[in-house]
Image: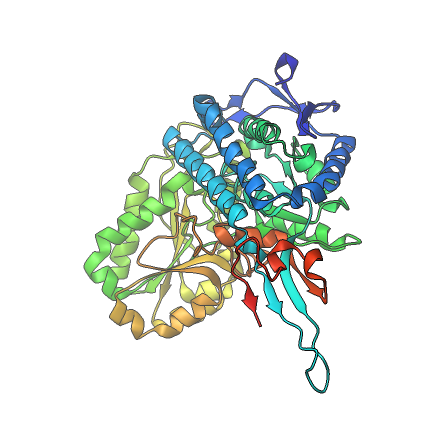
Length: 522
């Protein structure tokens, strides 16, 4: 840490701070700034970070997978060394409980170790070999070999709601480092201290494992200027972002307008529709109320997978379900949101939703003792009105959900057809009744990245089969996931080698196969 309680930017393995503008982070529970000044990166420092990343890209990308794995493992170790101080910073800056902080820390460490293993085994290179056929008629066939290679320096934007798992050393950073891409992190100002501490751990890990000094940079920024400069810098070859549709779309547009457009992998807004079947309600109403109430309130609703739309057939059980869920939410204590800005955004979106004339309030809890606590709210609308009003599909980021009452299956299906892209879609049903309505599954699967049966959408498992992404506006490219093993495929591109001598081929493509990879041949 720099002197006078000032926190600089990590560039080329050193802490630098040439800027004049500084800002503080904020404690939402105490509703006051936290002591400590974060020096915003200057344009010169952004350029320097990008230049260092570009300079060291070739060196870093050519290291063995084992060396990169050693680096990622060391990052996890250095973050663990931060111990209670990191948890304290996390809780102070977010208002989230210690249990959540420790859980997210565990996930972050597991991700780093998962991608370390992926770096070590190199299967992401996906080597494919088509051997030459010089005697083929009427034309000879050349020897062709294809594999994945890293793109280059990656810009990662820290997420407001996940200071560890989706930020400085989170999944985007870990997966990019695993395949040989240097990373430039634009920290999120809402958890500046947490981000700074993790960045310092990454720098120490790079030094201890003798990585090129430009492999990682961490830039402070309170507004959009630094992020915009990173996004258009010619040395940056792709962007990872987790946040709002507005923010992700702005980066996508900036990247598309560059002389050399680059991919933006943004995970953005989602209302995560839930369909509750009548037979399920008849026999398990209380259980479903508890499941959904817990899911809506988890993390004060500040999850990209929070259930925002709940569909069902309007009958007596559905009416009882609506009433019971509203009562369950209203009886729960209000919770603190991440930051006053997040709370203002929630209030604005909530009031906009409530101002729609066809929407009725089923239940809320406005007993807040802190200005940053959110009033959890459940509303209701008829399917016809939902279909006619696209505003009702806008995400309300926080503890909020809308019940959509449908007169029959046809109306429910029509309502589902109006949905935009989402991360998840959940179905609460018995297997036999769902089998009679498979058209709903077929409709839903084209609008989500993950289909869920009899479980809530909150809770994202980090594993090879997880798909965390979906059609726009859930993400900017539904072919990729932001979570799990395949997240690293965002940072690579295929390259073919035609008629190359064996000795000049990358090891993954050599017929001798010194890396022992699974090669697709002919």
